[in-house]
Amino acid sequence: MTLQRTIKAFVRKGEKRYVAECVELAVVTQGETVDETLANLQEAVALHLKGEDPANFGLAPNPTILVTMELEPVGAQA
Image (cartoon, rainbow, N blue to C red):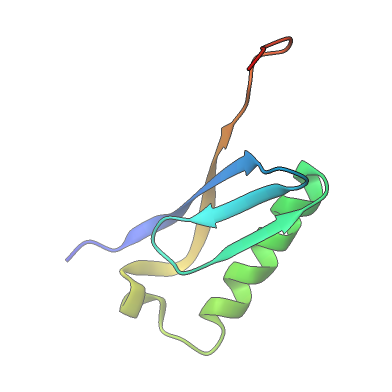
């Protein structure tokens, strides 16, 4: 089995805050800014994996986080 070197996550704008959600891990976090959300995501993933063997999640040692952002075009109307 090949272990993944990246953890995929999506960041989107919620009603009031940005929300980050991992694909492979049960990790969801939020923040008021994109920077805060990304910092919270790093911390949440680190806490989730703390004391765990990443291989149990199909991950290589010291994986990185690959973030995809969902943005609306400027001036887009609902």
